[in-house]
Image (cartoon, rainbow, N blue to C red; front, side, top):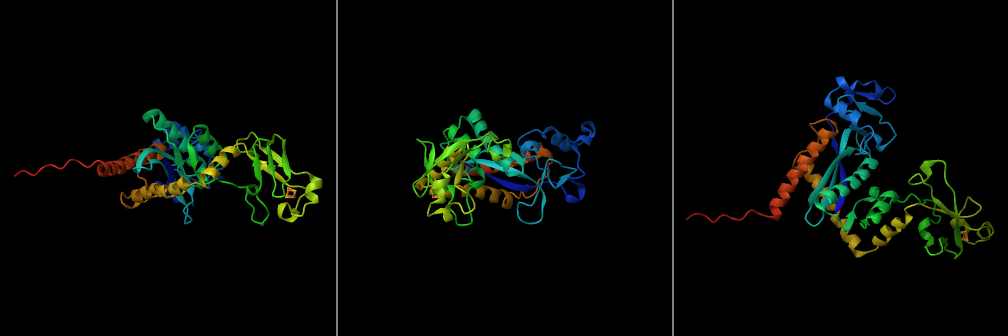
Length: 319
Ligand code: SF4
């Protein structure tokens, strides 16, 4: 299976919106609010919507407050929802759809919802999941590997450096001895520490830190390439780093190359949705409105696909 999200414009305009400094959801009276506004209030604690991020959007629409103010298309910003597709890559059939707020946390989170739903509803359990880098976060990869779904996903790795010094990938992981081996053959051992700042760890539970010995690192001929600004070299290992390694190993296989081509099938479905079915802007408002429209559009796409896979038997012409 493959997963991806596409941004669809909501039926909302900036003229009818409030900047974040002035927006206060607690002032809204739900008994007197239209359906889309009531749905916004009802989904404030849901992971796909309000709870997806603590960051307040720059503007909130009055007519459809659950829609996200976004400039993700690198053009002028607008209000939109994300249409998330989970597809079967053998045939390009959409197996699940979910509307979310247009931010990555919500889109990635919806993948879990869809995978759990197709398992419960159709007993479908993919051997592998194909997705782009945004889905390659530690917690997501860990979640997939725990469920025996091979992540054909580039790892979202923030440990990269752009100053030419060695990155974590240049150090060999020695799982048996719980240590890293540096390019000079020295060991970096772990010391644990629970960060009080939950943002420092991928799940709020902290990260493991491995460090070289100060006297060895200070005398090392590769010091300049390893740690120009410190007394010794240290490397952090996130909680789901094992799952990250699984994904990195998969990325070296021939099947992965095929998977990256198969990923285009989701993009083609979104292109078809917008260009052929003309779903560039939603007509219905609120999370339920977006979900209904996305579901109906996906159903239309599947019917077209199924008609091609299983063409109707030809009727013999009457003489
Ligand atoms: S500086 Fe330390 S960690 Fe880096 S290569 Fe040299 S010995 Fe290894």
